Image (cartoon, rainbow, N blue to C red):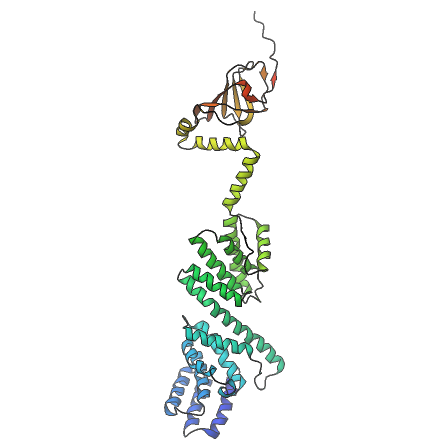
Length: 423
């Protein structure tokens, strides 16, 4: 901290005029050890000063030195404890100079992050310090206006960062305890104060995803929140841009692809939408891969009803219990109309059996006719028929059906050639 030495020299001059017997020497020992970087000895000197001169006109000054020393010794809990009373009085009377107040407030908003599990009192102290720091307008004595303006921006960012940390602390605690609903409620409250926070959006996505794993229906909202975390301005969102790009963006892409399927254009559209609003619009929904597959299947069935019917039948027949399915569900039953390609007929003239491929390739159906066809059938054409299933073999796959000529449409018949003469 750049103002420590100035403060100590100023205090030293004051003490030289108003100290109690032996007090200045006690203070001087504190400053000596602090300047030498031996903070353990500086703390011991402070304790000696407190023990020998418990009541002093410089109680607040001494408390400020305690704050600095505990911070240097990495004892954030003690920093919070010792500094709290300094925020309760009139700042003009408590702090010798603006620089002293600045220093204490800054150390408080920094120390709160170093406390493992801050108490409610510590959180209240840090929140008060952050708000006071953000509202400070008076430049420390001797600081140029341009330097103060830059410092104010940095200090304001530190204050906002501390307030965000405190706002998200209940979220982190709820998530740690697997309280998904509590985390989601807490993060909504945090977003009211910090709507542009990338970290808050990240926590929101995590809480919603936690809820989605317990009860379906929140995954779309979770992905929306992660998309917002990936798309927000990292400067305004108070995060490291590298973290946003290396952690948030890849996680979003992975989650979106697993849930919805690979769709780069759709993902970019989602991020653009998410930037504009903390919460998704009413009725917002991202179709899952399963939903898309169901929709695709429904569209396919509406356009190709006969082929869709055949695929369901064929899948059931090739399953491990296909023979049982045929015997119990198909045998001697008239099936709905089917459509396929005629790939062969026997005999060549006056056929009584047709070979049909429903889904390309080799014939899957043997269609036995009640009466022979008059003429020769042309292979390759599309036919539509309705008949009764009478037989099935699994390997090679073949379903046998019987039907009447009147129930077969699309047959292309040509006259048979002249019979061969034999001698």
